[in-house]
Length: 102
Image (tube, rainbow, N blue to C red; front, side, top):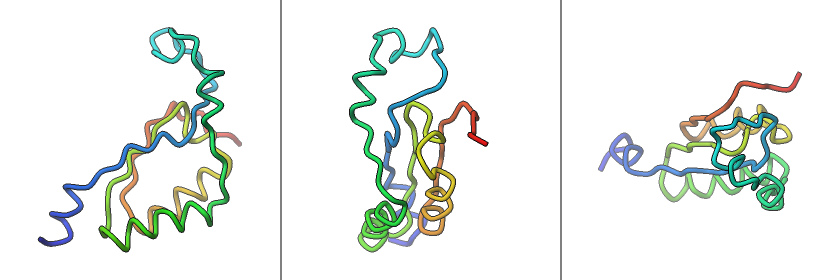
């Protein structure tokens, strides 16, 4: 199995951040009034720690595809730095509302 075949088989859906700055009426988290409860699941780690986690995945499987979702993943502290670091090892797809903090 070559690297592209392996990549096509391994995907991760990563709920990085359970917080959102929008309150879209069609969002199931909003409809269930679940944001406060979900926010308790947030885990803030330094980028270097996440790099260790995803480096281990890289050592085990090679390049994989990470679907980064949330809430709004770009609100995660140091999100851009995290994306840059992980994109050196893996393919990243981010589901976002594009409300990037300035």
